[in-house]
Length: 163
Image (cartoon, helix red, strand yellow):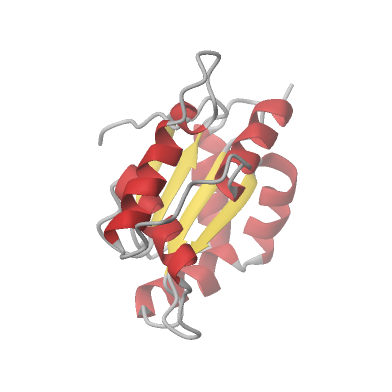
């Protein structure tokens, strides 16, 4: 399992915006050649900034609950469980990425989703990532037959103890 850095999604002190360049390329490839990337932060940039400020890791969940049985099961058994929601509220930032079919995504939403899929090398749904505040990938997995309580125990083993 390779580790990815997403720190390059946040503007560096050198003023580089590789993610915005990627976004522009993807938007262009989707037939929107006149799209220009906005310099306002994307939701991912905002959640990563919040992660850095709070020291909480980010759980990114690539889900397709309206078309994927595995996504629906994982969402029902784990992500919607009382054990996970109370743990997440206290110890991490949860950021779901929905790849839905209905209602159809707008061009801009599709371009953003495609850019995230490319950046994180998403090959299947669901894909769950646990990212440290610096953007380092700590965990990556697909569907797991696991309860919410067992999943919380797995996350507790991966996270540093709270100060």
